[in-house]
Image (cartoon, rainbow, N blue to C red; front, side, top):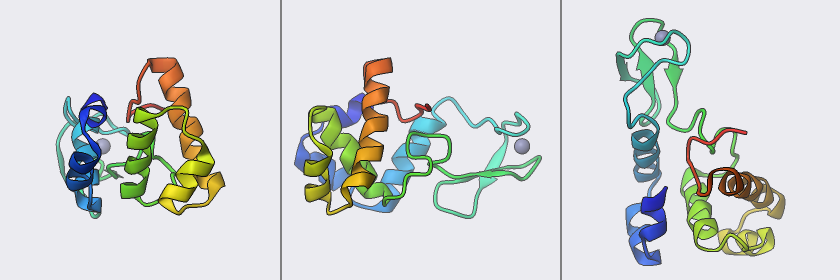
Length: 133
Ligand SMILES: [Zn+2]
C-alpha cells in the first residue's frame, strides 16, 4: 500500500478513478506472488466472471479481486473504498464524520471500514490490502 501513500491527490484521482483500475490494482497486489486456489491449492487459473476475478482451472472455484482482502464484505463501491484508504493513509486521525461528508456515504459505513483500516495500521504499521481480522 505504500505506493498509494506516495501519490498526491490528483495522481491518486487519475490512477484510481474507475472501478476497473481499482480492481486491477487490488488483484495485482493480492496475487503479486501468483495465484493459489483457496480451496485446492492449485496454481493455474483462467479469467473469472467478474472483472479481475480468477477461476481455478482444477476445482473451478472462483475468487473475486476483493475476496479475502480488507475490502471483503465492504458495502461501498470499490473506488470509494480505495479513496477512503487513501484518505486514512494520509490522515489516520480523520473522523468517520469527515469521511462520511467527503465521500457522501453513511457515517456508520465509513466508521466500519475506517476501524478496519486503523486496526490494520496498529497491527502491521501500514495499510495492508490483504489484512484480515
Ligand atoms: Zn481449486
